[in-house]
Length: 207
Image (cartoon, rainbow, N blue to C red; front, side, top):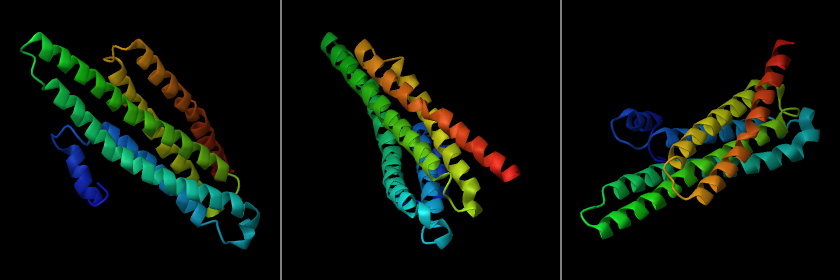
């Protein structure tokens, strides 16, 4: 997807192919949030007026760039993970041995398919935290973009959570379900910060 145009990728998303789908879209949303954080940093760094925030902006910029790359990779990984589940369901089931092998393969595939959106959720949560770090020191000309970054990451987080949940319901290993659900709930705590950032920016814009 890194070598296709946005229009081409959206056409694939809109097609009757099972992937890319919502999981990949969540990854792209997280990447957009990270890119906006980078933009705000780049438009703040080097300006004497914001010199006291320079160190933080540079640190956040480096982290945002890393997260953007990770989010895009996860968007690609999501399509592969989903394809793995589909392939497992297509395995033969004529004998008891084949049925057992198929069931095991499906369970492995479901765990992998849940792990990718969970990673997206974690990335999105980190992007929200970065948005919070630059809120006070950002160039006011791009203040709204801080909120849009948090909003995009929040959308990615919520979308990723849905993709984790839909796989969780079919995972039979209770310990694995609890592990994935616990990690997801931890990431979801960042939604509160995203909403606070959006509210703070709206309040400052309207003041």
